[in-house]
Length: 246
Image (cartoon, rainbow, N blue to C red; front, top):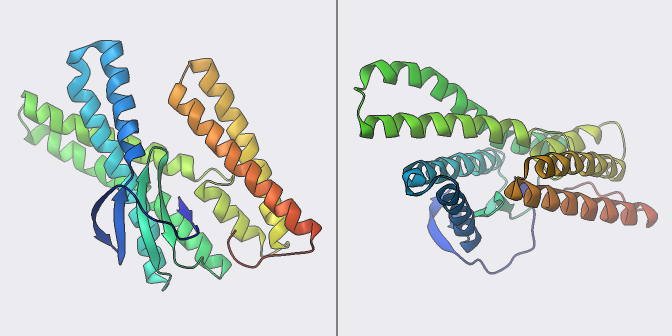
């Protein structure tokens, strides 16, 4: 997910630099890892530890590829990134300034899910070649399991983020596209409403399946969409129609 946020002091572990921006893991990402491992251990015992660690590694790689996709496209369009951050809820790229043209916003927003879907297609092509060539033993089975898990997570992350509701990447794409035919404030309000509907649907699904993590994500999406809706409605009341990202 790409964002324009006010500058703030960054906490967490710095991994390096990509596209001119430092890459950080916030402490909350460790909570995500602990939740995944802890849930697996409680459900299946210590025998599930290996699979849980593979899942954590796969989701880490899928998320960072997603954010690198945003940052790489932004860099290609001369939009500098301030930092790339991985968090409990995924990650985000904080830009020095938001994309100023609608098609820039569309390209930057689509690049994250696009990177995930490209990873999925690549793994679909690679796995059939690796499986016959790798003898069946615990190490090779673990490698193949990790690659298969990464492919599946890449597909899920790419498709989910293309859903057309704010604050997902698909919501940014829809919002920017709508600005070609309606005022930006109207586009913001519409995509915020869609975001609320998506959050509501995800909330119902999470409750029906007893999925705590998904429930938290649904709540965050709904809260973010509601904040965007209120902000856009306030701008409309003041007669403001922003021409850059909110």
